[in-house]
Length: 115
Length: 114
Figure 1 (cartoon, rainbow over the protein chains, first blue to last red):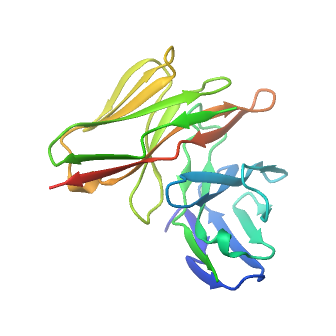
Figure 2: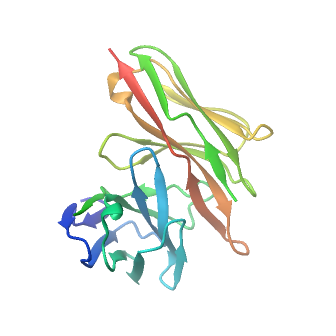
């Protein structure tokens, strides 16, 4: 079984709809991240959480919200989806005790299309 | 803040050697990492350099010069399966004694031709 899972893997929705993307991990890591990827723009950080009680904004948090329901679960919500939120979304985890590398482990991604 | 620069595209033929450069600006330095991402797939960790010099892992090597704020990923004996995007990343400082998050470059698309 995959260590970091994302649901759904693909989603097509309409402008104005509320969407939730979910991420679960079995790696026992404290740190979790949500990234957005658009062609040519690399990985842009939306939100990150260093533990259950810690939530931090990334560079592109506008239009998004998150919830860290448990150590293993981190969900991303689009309250009112708009077409320019069409992108590939990745969840990632890292181990706070993992030393300086902070190696990140990515889920398979969710491809979201907003019409 | 942190910023990273890497070329957007690199092309090479099978069997060749290619070098992907990364220059960075960061407040506090905790090492340079490299990630690989195949088209449509998830990024995966490749290598990490905390100290100056070359780290070798099979066909891939990564180099760091802290004084020049520069590093590179060297791929030897290129294979078609090496066609992918490659991202460099640096770690930022956090609050108190906690180290911060990773900052990624925009990625370099490597195309390997037969």
